[in-house]
Amino acid sequence: MSDLIELTVTEAAVRIRSGELSPDEYFEAYRRAAAGDSLNAFLWTAEDTAQADLEGTRAARDERDSERPLDGIPVAVKDIFCTEGIPTTAGSRILQGYRPPYTATAVRRLRDAGARILGKANMDEFAMGSSNENSGYGPVLNPWDEGRVPGGSSGGSAAAVAGRLAPCAIGTDTGGSIRQPAALCGIVGMKPTYGAVSRYGMIAFASSLDQCGPLTRDVSDAALLLRAMEGRDPCDSTSVGIEGGIELPSREDLKGLSFGIPRELASDAEGIESGVQEVFERTVALIEELGGEVSETELPHAPHGISAYYVLAPAEASANLARFDGVRYGMRVDADDLTEMYEETRAKGFGPEVKRRIMLGTYALSSGYYEAYYGRAQRVRTKIAEDFSRAFERFDFVVTPTSPTVAFKLGAKTDDPLAMYMNDYCTVPMPLAGIPAISIPAGVAPPADGGPDDARARESATRLPVGFQIAGPAFSDSAMLDAAHALEMAIGFRRNGTAT
Ligand code: GLN
Image (cartoon, rainbow, N blue to C red):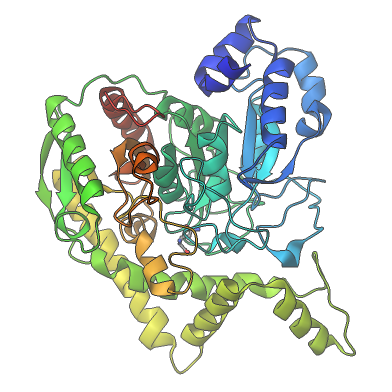
């Protein structure tokens, strides 16, 4: 059974299709692993295959349609995706007990490709956070070191895949929430081009930034999931899909490709740990060995990404979260009159970070300040997008560290929202520009905050994964996956921390 759990999705799918592996046996192996979750990665897990196969799937599966590329694959679904009849909380107490009447398009497409819902993954409340400590249901632990955070906001998805509780997962990325937890947990995480995957049924945080994407053991698995999910959806007018679909990666070298290193997000960036920097430089050298051309470039406005993001995202969130009023969904605190009921429900249901963002966002949108904050942040956003366009005239891709640090200790940044926001320094510019980006595990490094006092424990336990980020122009998703695949093969990352 432990062997089954080591298979990638691509490998398992081949065995299932050839009849060598029973989908029920495979599901059962993961169902048991997920039921024994000691990382708090799941908020709900399927009790049996009947629950995992949403309505309509079972009949189709009985026909054993061999064309279905994800037939029998269990998937962990971030709890921000609506799943018909299955509890969906977005990590918030305000949605406790909510069971949606419909299923998100991204999940429906996975299901149509044959996948089964293994569980709903824990997350920062309404996807606001970088450590999963903002969940209304307790933090998720990092499987590499349970005293550390898995990253956020898709921390449950990342921990489940890295901790062998799920073969693959989906999450959402607004400012880095797929790529950063993937980096901190040593797995692959991809944010597709804005519009590649439908947002229908994905509980909205900041609608102009939110994108759904895969968290997987390797790049081929990410491509497989994205291939099933992408596409135009009449229920989301911003979804356009990817022309020609997603091709499965096969590249073995990087000949003919050029990579720019934006100095603002690499050498000139403050706060990048030396261990992270070393792994980054080693990986850049590997790109050159694979025949890729590398040189420095600039994204002059990227350092303002965090400031713009933390105006725009809260502004959109403050509008999106107005719907949680105690009337339509989940929790209600009864009171004497309607206004009081709204106030008490929201006071009790939302956590402190969500309240902070609603207040910031409402302020930024108020009539006297709209131009000074929201208007200006939108202009910065345009500048950042123009910087990327200019860089992509010269380079096929830009590369950066995914996160300035490796996984940090639980509680280390909870009292300092600004320090927490800096986690997103390298990941926020891409969603502001709407472009795709992927994080792949590139090596391990000791944390700068030191490990346990016991020297032996330090030796074995404190080398933590480091992510390497590749970003490309809008709709270059297939080409980006292909390049990431070649690099991943050369890195040869192993979960035990050895990279060949
Ligand atoms: N960490 C960022 C935030 O707190 C990004 C979150 C996300 O991408 N959903 O907003």
